[in-house]
Length: 213
Image (tube, rainbow, N blue to C red):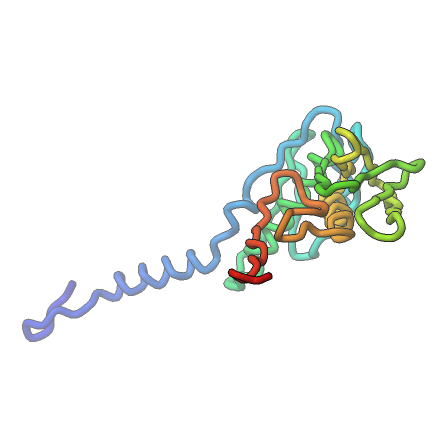
């Protein structure tokens, strides 16, 4: 730090270091995005430009990603996603998202995904008709849901538990949400279709007026 007429003045080198630190922080990559993706045995990953194809014992998935994300296969067991340096925070979000989607693809073809739903209510039940899910949940007619390609249904535990299985995590969640939407759980007695482990916010029932005859 130099002095002029007894007054301290900031050093130019200190200001430069501060600016450099801010510059580095603005170009920091996503902590999630920079993690390598482990590819288990029995799973193969092929990359053609921005299109990634993952093949495994459960099936095959393919997806095209943003052209600014560079997807690199280091060896047969590791894939990394590289993000160009940028001050735009959207790049960090895109970096982490790309890595998460590829990791989900790898896990999906290796192990698959399952979402469980539970039916509550007297007389409510689920049945299978070929590959279709048939729901009897208080309507004048049963509701039939046909699974899209890559999705299968299973009913167990006294026709009260529904399992949605598939290799595409997004599609499994989307179909499970569609099943739940047929009869969402109501807040008074909890009747309806809910996710396993879902916390339903209950409301107290209406109390009769005191002294009413």
